[in-house]
Image 1 (spheres, rainbow, N blue to C red):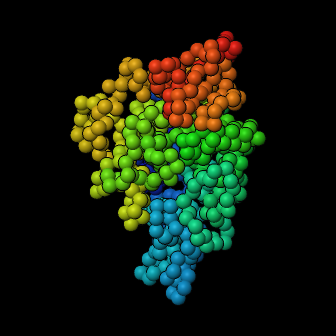
Image 2: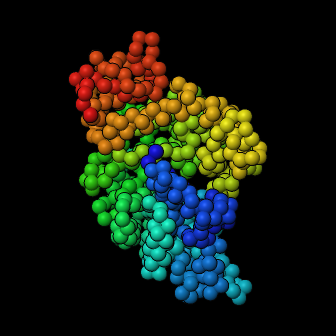
Image 3: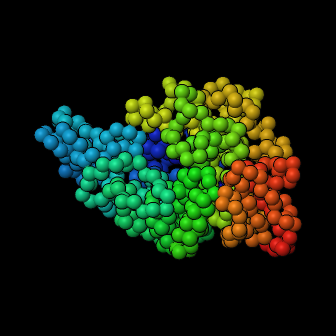
Length: 507
């Protein structure tokens, strides 16, 4: 590991798992104190780990003192200018200012009761109603976040993962937008941009932020969570005077076929090369189905927004087999790889989570049609036979853990040859030793359903076809996501790292 990224730990009503921040300069007592965080940063540094924190600039919590002041101050006030308040449409302003919908479901506008008790203006929230969007056209908002950056940099953090980085600036006229507003990626094509996402004005904000980070000694980093189309639009976020990296969600979304994987990998590398930035690779995170389950669905299935007990279930054996192959493919690519807690154990999604236990606002706001992200957020199992699998001293965890997770527990995998945990450890060690993260991809001839490339002195072969594939003549097997077949061939859904005879001794 090189760095740790913490999701939000700030004081919050937890309307959206802490992504509704009430105070950007403190720690929620659910998790500890500022002194605890300072100690954690120091302990990480002592182990050679960088420390990245989550910053949520698109919206605050409705409990933030700015928003409570805005409600109390009334229409036309300076306090309301910090957010996106508008009068409603129609007689008496009873209709929302436009037709935008929340990413979590339902309207993206909520009407407030004014201080005099009358029905009043509406405020924008692209997510939950407890997450009012800030007005980034206001200099005061921009200055506040520059100060927040400095506050955490002064406490020793090494950088920021920036939530909803593509959403801060809205089209000035707030024009109606009839398609869904959820920020998705396309397959290499730039579609018409919605008026709430990826507006060109965001780049001036991040240029200001980059100047702040450059004031500090050593290496600091900004990482964009930006669901945008296309790869070229995403690369704009990592130009030399903006962010350092951006999550590659087109890669995460790519179907498990050789042509699509090839297209996304080459497109991503080419787009980032034009701006001199490293490409990132990610397969799972806190907002999507874990890839050990997602890849267990039939190829081409649109990614569900959560899976429940009465939904079609993934094939867990197939999913884990493909997940291991996808991980070895990802870790052989040059750039930065981001791992989501628990994937190193091969954890599947909790697809039978009781609906009454769900906490994701998507479940309620979608009218119980989208189960949301709780299934990937369940606390991971450390000890198979301990209460809550070692998560805490009691039997219950904040989201219930499935009984089948005992077999994935860390204490049942550590030191066990062939376990997913040991696969990750070996892969990360070899990735560093072989310099794969700083290498270059050279594609090699292969069948249509096979990916085959060279990175430095290593050949990487992923078989996505139905039939086993012969190893190149004279190749030395360095690593594999699963066993070869009885004839020494690469089976379906297996990735191997090889050193071929003509590349022996190269690095």
